[in-house]
Length: 316
Image (cartoon, rainbow, N blue to C red):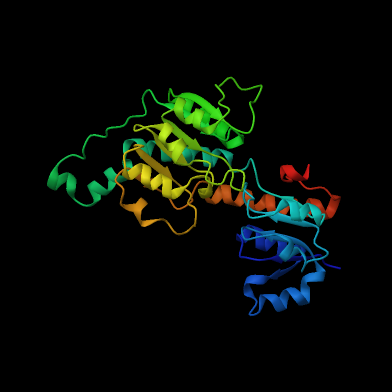
């Protein structure tokens, strides 16, 4: 008998085509009445393939025989791992394959923010170079800056390696000091902000990091400080960030993620030294295909061997 899977939302063709060839895939997003579909097929579902959306007791109670959630993305704060553990459901994600792409994006976003490249491009496109003259000199430079990395995991380390090549000094903060890392460690995020002038947020979302970058941290970063966020939007208190930018408590910000995506607060869009991207950290076709393949590989490995390729840390 074919193993039956639930796909709550559309996924990349590389995922859908392979899963369709091997499993019976129930597409919840195509159902006129999703609750009725779950009531009908829920007991037969053994796996969930998903890109985003909540997985908790409310959903798992309708899927009593689910064995695995194969999630697309390195972050998995949308999945309640405690609920999954209680239900004996494996959770996997897609780390490593997006590390280099996200690190490249982080450096690009930092350069754009510090040197105002996006604003300079708009100046040219609007005809101002010819009509009004050169774009004003940028008051910030990357030279001599100290980068504080909040979250020195796989991606954080890849960012640090790139930043070192730009001559930046590296400091970091995380849950604990890493014995094999020579960069200066700060036990508090405020301490890290005090020691640096560029704060790179790479931390995952969830209750432990919610609004970790708050008014106090931004105050510690100081008036020449720049915040870059390619982690999760919920890590930064957006209201505090907007206030700090408006009041000159920090210099600027580069943001690829936001608290209530795809909504971006209008105040951020009108501030002169803010660079925004629409959550494109890993958004190249090659990297997204690699992530999608890992979703498939986790499901195949689980149903063939009972072991996942990349379980989330809580499952180890």
